[in-house]
Length: 114
Length: 115
Image 1 (cartoon, each protein chain N blue to C red):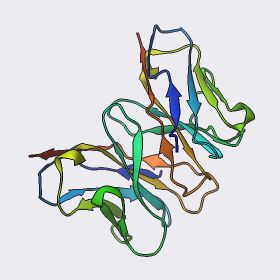
Image 2 (image 1 turned 180 degrees about the vertical axis):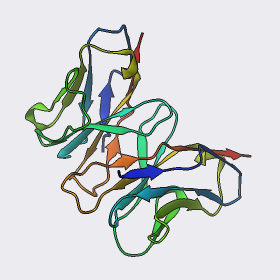
Image 3 (image 1 turned 90 degrees about the vertical axis):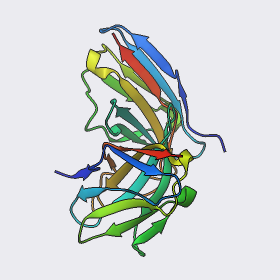
């Protein structure tokens, strides 16, 4: 079974620029998560989708971050405009169901904002 | 506030010795508990989880963890460490009686196994 795919793997931008990340979850997984992992910290949930609906986006900085999951499969996470403190690894994960179901993580996108 | 604590930033163990990576939590009720491992430049990999039942949970790669309700702990253990176990380990909890499925991760413990 193919794992969670993410692209790009690395991205370097200047502050105030915009950037987008793409995630393709494991086939058949209804739940998709975006996490932000700052160096030296554990992942922090940004947004969770159940199919194409948002379940939790309480920690998403909505003034600059947006995410969508059209058709309930692939998802994109966008930052516009980026700030220096957005430098982090952005992880996408998926699970068959929500709740206690195991989350499977992609390799992440390392974002550097200069 | 709900939280997860991994009190050790780094744990150093000689190959062949037993290892323990500590995790304590502050969550109301009996939460769901997880351990994940992260290798360099890779995403997190699931190791094991506690949902209910036996307090000792066995997982991947010979790891196990013990849920201790009175001490609110979920320490990760392995009887005999391998050099290949060297990685970053994250403990995570999810409140059991909550409509939100948000999992809270600890800050991670770097495990280093010396030959």
